[in-house]
Image (cartoon, rainbow, N blue to C red):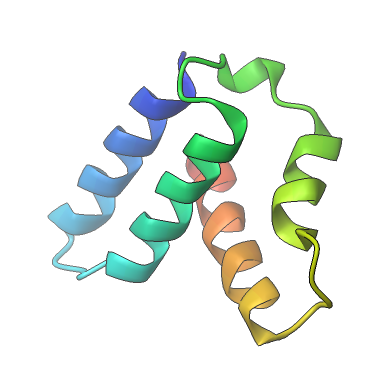
Length: 77
């Protein structure tokens, strides 16, 4: 299944429970842009996830926010 489709389903799923889910949705959209929305979710490499998480800046509190967003998404997927 394509990454963009899974992210859309996951966002809809979380919002169905009444969550605002704004920040995590934005992080996942950014992840989708970084990886490529047409990429099959099974083709995403750990290095790509690490590159998204680490970026080019030092690790800060926002790293943990991105990690938590991806962690929840991958548990769902």
